[in-house]
Length: 121
Length: 121
Length: 121
Length: 121
Image (cartoon, rainbow over all chains, first blue to last red; front, side, top):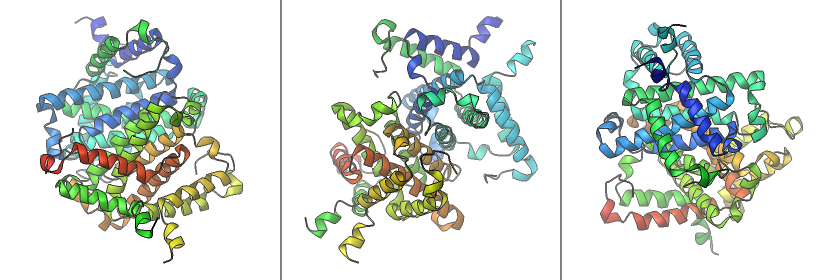
């Protein structure tokens, strides 16, 4: 796989594709950060509905169910689409933003103090 | 920037880092798909709260407010963390899942039929 | 309308009816607070999707659209169902809980200090 | 307790109190259905966060934890406040809307066909 092909699978490129998709359809007018945050919340609602009646153990096995696995993958795709689009219109790099928060969390949750505990800080 | 450094900023790598972060803290036991979907919904709730009282026009300018921009970037980072972690435990590639949905949408919303319209299909 | 008929329209009674509905179907086993909170979030996601592409002004007029108004009413009904069911299994009185929070807010947001401002405290 | 005192605890009365609270603060301008749906989603996000790392069994016992029970009650109060306020600005009766949906569900899920099953229809 050459460098270009590789790049075409990254989230940076996904942002450009989604922008082109919206621009071609003249949907930019609807894609304010406020509206995109709502669309993101709507898709997360559909994703969470896939898990609401499953036990935690059943949720671990969800991808071995042919129907549920397709729905879960599709909902995760929808969530990623709106999250990427929101980050793009705000000019935020998704991976950088996540890594910044991960560094914060590493400071707040030192390994020897929190091992095995779900308590919030 | 060499290829390795570039790769370290991709979402593929983010998944690995988050897995290591959780493993070191023995948090894998809490990271069922059910629980991660809930954590994702919780973070999306915090993100949407940043936009709830803004007009659409104010939301477009949110990154020029020094305080709000930092909060929005942090909340987007949190959402990306839980979305990536959820995709990782389900063995779903986030960008692939998004591109599959984008292809569906391209079929369902042909450019000449939907230009400028927000109607759902 | 007599007192009994009146009571039958209150949220106290709604809780009892929903409990009977679940019990008849042996759904109590699924109705843990965790699962009901997820179902509530899923329904709120469907409700928010009704408003995502509307301007604030269009959202004010949503009930004059015959199709959208029916969908919005149905989604609000679903949200109320899961919120009432969740409160019932936790033995929380919804109206009391809301009034307690309203009293807190009255203290935190004195009329002369916050008039016309959406800033959070 | 006389009839008036009883009425003062119903959700009908809650709607009037919340309207007065908003009017005194000149917050009606922010309380479009779009914004209130977002505020509702934000509060549901805070509520779901209370349950995200609990097992279903732990969630059943949440009200016996003095700290968690207070937070859960407060979050449920916040959700009820925004749901009631949204219904009020749309002129929807919450309990009626829920009862309409309950009648639909009774038709879609006949007792003898769905007993003990969480499958969606």
